[in-house]
Length: 172
Picture 1 (cartoon, rainbow, N blue to C red):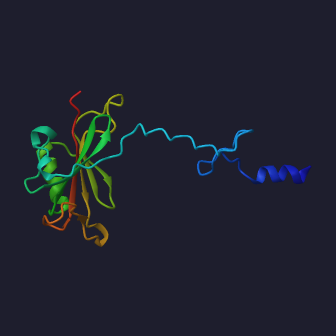
Picture 2: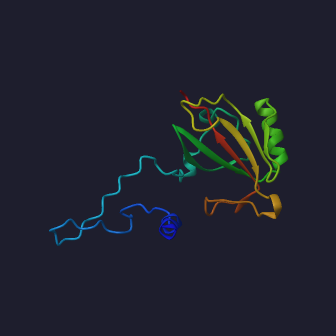
Picture 3: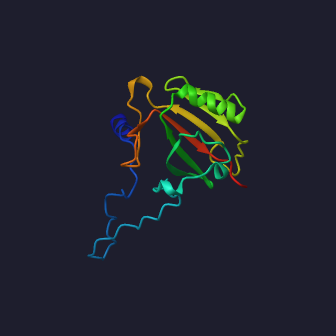
């Protein structure tokens, strides 16, 4: 009895049928059963915007852009929000100072290593937002890294020392 119980507890239960195995055939049928169709995903994957010509403006973002900031891409953040990424070759400390002055808020240090600083630009509404509207600055040269790769091929620079991520306040 002990041996039988220990054998049952030794193996975790397996889902039936397994996704990689065909379902067992019904009695009286010689044809193998077809696997159940997989329903389409209800959440869309985060898709980047490819063209730099789609670069958002200060008016559409609702925050000032650093003058030398170069638009990289944007991603769907969910609930009607987007992340907008901009690269600059300016020191992290200079970017934090610029946005402290431009936004007239101190912001908050999110991480000491790698240095990451965030400025909230609107109140987070849990019922309508996925992320807090904010400007986040991150140092991509921390620890000797070469920087954030520029995904816009053929456009200098090859890498950015600092990245600005903007999540604008939703119009709702």
